[in-house]
Length: 409
Image (cartoon, rainbow, N blue to C red; front, side, top):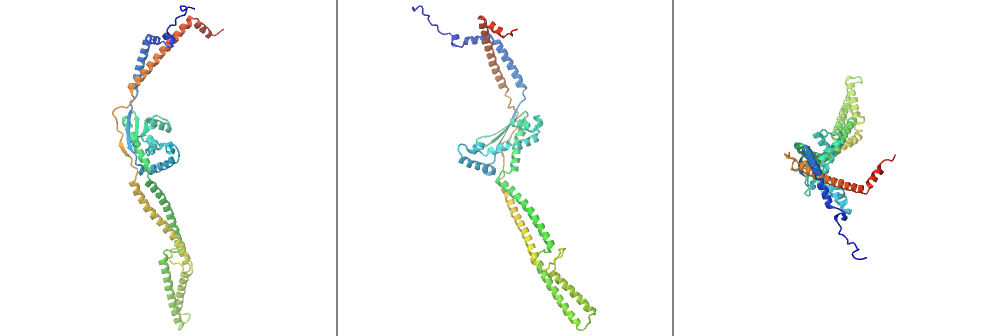
């Protein structure tokens, strides 16, 4: 074979390399009117939609949460998590729970169901969002608010709404509800101590009332009112009665020396002596029913006095406990007032006079670019299908393909 008979290789053209860029550009140029019409329609439609969208106003409130040294809950939580984190590997439990700083506690409170329900009821958000259930209303509210904290610990509450005033009111209401909830759940250690002492005081009051009633019942049953003074009075009364009885006996002995048994004076003195001895026996041996009689039998004084002293001791004990708790309660109230949780508002939310959204220009721009890309892709795909069809028609395979698609009868 000679050199002339060897075919000289040709340089590969654009078509043989795989992609005919010039052909693609020619297809785009040929369908430029279709692309421009689609893009213009997208611009007009997106501009109309953007103009019809309601304006959105963004209100932002910035607060400084209490220092962690003044927050019992924060310090206890962070201290426990720090110990657990140091005992484990990696980020530890604190990182797993996301509690990196005390601000996370207050962010969690702001996102709580209690705060959401209070705002829903306060601003009647169920009707505003046109929701049927409270759960749906909470979800709608959560979509409108963003609560975050920065590296300095400041907490930002950002709320979006179609009305500027309502957006500012709700953002500031989050701060109000945070203060109410923190006061109610007693975050500080002083508040927790005050609540504990308050519960103990209530229990002690109940026990003190029971002890007082028991002492009163014992006094009614035994007749003992004041053991020391009452015992002295009883002994003096017995001594006085014995002295009177002795005098009557002397008087009777004198009358008997000259009078008969039927003498009226002798009979009277003897009756008086019998009465005195009855009173002495009552004071020394007989039991007292307690119907207002302050005299207790001297024979029952040890038993009645012991029962009285026990009841009196219980009452005095409960009274002393109550007085001690009352002093501690006042101290706890002072500590709570000094270390109370104070939410400091750095920037309150204000009513803006400029919309923060929607970004109408960006909406139109994105819609235009997206439509332009789709239109170009559609033109290229349609051109490719047309060329493929023409190639199939030239070698007869297109007609064969159409014939195969027909239903055979």
